Image (tube, rainbow, N blue to C red):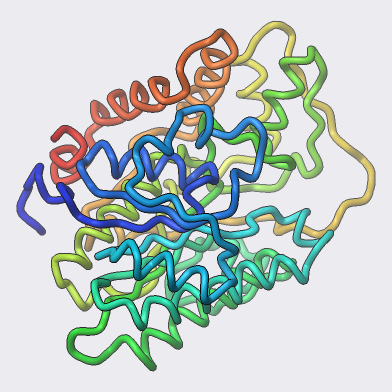
Length: 367
């Protein structure tokens, strides 16, 4: 275990791709809080409103580059100009239903985008480590109720999931082909579950859709109420990525591999269960109904085995799925009443620290 050092991240140069998205915005805030020098490469925020804009996160960045993640010249120029020590690659087309509507763009962004980042990384002399963030959906679907482990085969039966499986295969290829020699940047990947949290306004996601429906006094419409997913608050996987990033920057070469950062099996709830909890927490007669129209296929059961992250990185989840829903709904409620988006995020970080976060991460965040 790495010794606690509250100044570890101070002045570390970290580049986040997709920093204008939901997870990227939370990650930017965490890195800034820990004293890192943060740069970003992304398109403009994908939604209006966006957490990036509402929390004025541009104020926290040394470099804020706008580039298509699949544009090698643009990404390489941004990376070399910022000169990062660590790259956290989050830029993606992250919606299953959108991948059915536009599979070509999904593969271009998720596959060619990953290839572009890895190619740019090869020619960036300052770089010491890269983490490619994918998804629990990257695994080949077996339709079995057994959690996925990191050595399970990649796959995915819808364009989004399959594109992320391809991204994982690319990562493994580049690690074996180009990032093994002495002095090369270490390359890992990170797979999380169904991430929820305040500041997500994407379409076709359960709680953002719920927030919009409840605010209008309408019922939330859901497609697959019996589908089981590994629900987790956004702070859970992000702290995992940061613990992994710290280990790689410390030179733990054996950790340059794929990692699962998912909740416990007890928090693999159905979509209906989470919708019911959201309605109860929101109150005011909030309700949900099932959409009985035909929809594209989505996996019926997903669960990650995160034993490796717990035992080798000291990472574990702190919130139950219901607590994650409660924190998310509370964020939206308070934001709607005029609270500062940035302060709401920072308040939840403070609460999260009180839940028994690993001492190393707690020291980093409390610097």
